[in-house]
Image (cartoon, rainbow, N blue to C red; front, side, top):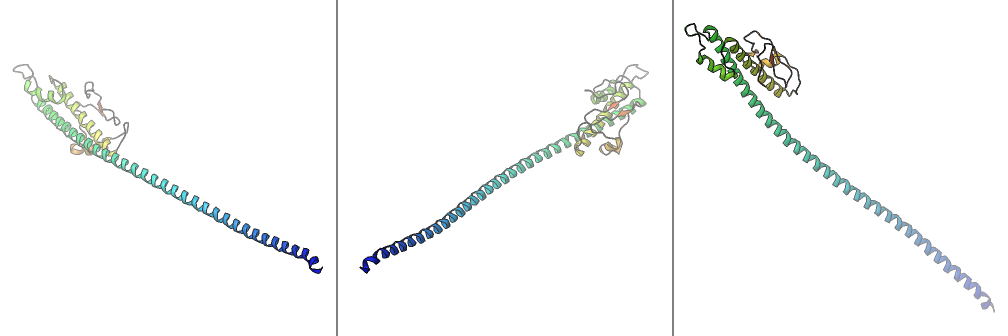
Length: 222
């Protein structure tokens, strides 16, 4: 009788112990599941950081490559500009030397004509031999002293114009830049600008505009 009366209690105790064991196992699983979830989140975060680092590195490499390409293009452009500037400087230097030689020839011819007029009293006709040099220099046919002086003045204007171009090239001056006679003096012989043999006054004008003389007919051909 006593065993029968204790049997239900024993069952209750066994069921309680089983429930307690199951609860404890469930708690352990919950703890393990929480830890697993935390590890999974950390793993996902690490993966995201790695992907971001890869993306940043790829972007940085791309940006660096783009910068290097631009630098290379800029270097090539600067080299081409430097080569072109050297060519322009050499061309302008040659042009200036030619203009100075022409101006000197015209000045010498003018001085010779002042000593020996174009129309000798014996013939009354112009001397063709004296006309050839100035015709070649200025494009004018020298038939009298006024044309001779005009030819010499035009060659002076060529010298000034060539000096202006060389000054602007070396100083990197844009079109419209102002300048003075002192700026151009180092680019002409004797470090002094030529003067009009007829007493005209020269106006240098800004870069890009030809110099002019105030005497009509003393002008560079357009």
